[in-house]
Length: 429
Image (tube, rainbow, N blue to C red; front, top):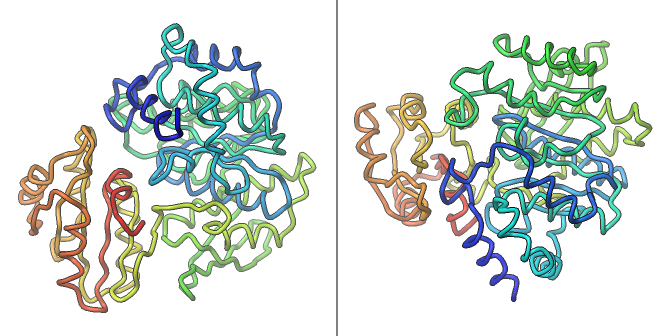
């Protein structure tokens, strides 16, 4: 099979979350364990960092991988979902997984699929770990897919675990309250393994502290050690001042723009501190360069991604209440003459919670991705009317974006958001 034929085979044969939603989620680790045992347990052959959270885990993963690359370590990176290319999920030093490896891997394990019945995500986790082990990486940064406790990635024993933000998302699978969701995320906390929490959120602190105590895991709340403030923007990057709890101060420049990245930066900086305790040689220069060059080093897409400047057009995968709130704050900080929002969501998200946050004075272009889970643009349009949001419905995000551009002045800001899968269909991303 060719690479494309191999991917088509996997999408057809295996439950894929982005296509069918919750029914693709497997609530235990038995299939992942079975696959990895067949492969010789490759995850036992490299060091790793494990990252969970509702928002921010992807950006934090990419920043850590970039820092480790700058420090000279051969670095594996596993994230999901991909935006444009399957290879975004599995990288070494920023390079996509070799397509020939994917083809051969699937050929080698295809006979096991009827017996093990893994999900698409479980298979890609096993594929990533096998690829990392065969390529003798120094360390891997591994992002959870959904939750933590029952996530397929939760078979690893990392040097450090990091949990970013906890907010409402995937409530049908993870729970209806923040403590319930936090309990699932806290499932990545391992016996004696240091755990870093990016920010103190009063409602979930007891969950993390209790779980850490049960596992005798040293726990740190990064925001207690690093206060990161935005100074401004320069040459398309965000300048930040970092105040440490010991009184030290320094400045750092991030190519990931957005107020929400300030909290992620604190978690990343504290995680690096913990890694240094294992003897990893990570200089201040590697930290600075890793954060400033994260886009070049890892190829990250969809996080406040600027695709044009006059007018400013930004794509962001923000898709839940907390994520949309933060991305709106960032948008307003640019003080646009007018904010235009191109938005599409999926059916299993609570659109009402997002719509009630959106400013009535913005101009809207409601649209949808072309996947079974997508909420039709006309339905989103009808829901939005109930919140006083005025706009038009489009069946294609690129048509919606073209219309927004045609109506925009050079000082407007056009924001495309609401779904990973919507951003994936933007031609310019």
